[in-house]
Amino acid sequence: MGGLELQRKSVMNVNGLLSKDTREDEDGNGNEEDSCSVCVAVKIRPLVTSEQEHGCRGTLAVAGGQQVTTEHSGSKHQFTYDAVFGEGGQEASLLYPKCVSALVEGLFRGYNATVFAYGQTGSGKTYTMGSEYKPGKQSTVGVIPETIHSIFSRIEASKDWQGTVR
Image 1 (tube, rainbow, N blue to C red):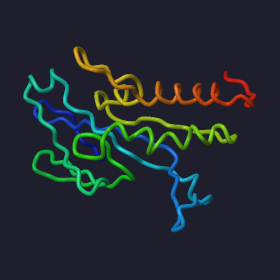
Image 2: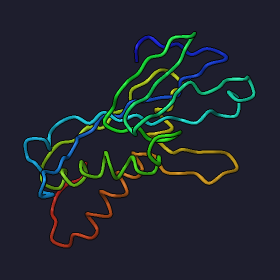
Image 3: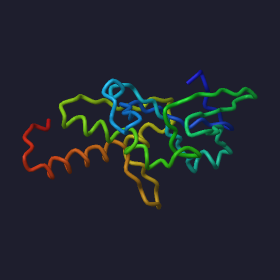
Image 4: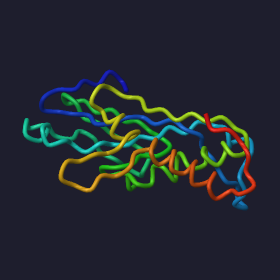
């Protein structure tokens, strides 16, 4: 992400998430050509308590739901993504339905799928992909547990489905 650094007073909490992007044409039908393109989304992790206690502050501003601007040492950098979730972007809980659920559906049509998180140490990859555990607060589910739940719920609901899960 452009050589940005993690410093004591200025923390960038971003991780990239890549997945399939399904677009609809004017009639609302899925466009087969676009259904295999890559979607690049960002989920912005909130500052954790220890960061706040050390005087860290967020350095990101979200505009238009797709652009992230970061200011570091007086210089600004702007990045554009297919979607931005959390801390000023779309509601973080929409990440799974907007970026991953179509991939799970594709699995049952015989397609392979990959979702991965990318980012610097401490940027929130585990927070996004695993469980978003917050001590003393209600935990939310990350991408991997939600995906596993969706796959097995779909298998259980499909009485006529035959396959192997390995």
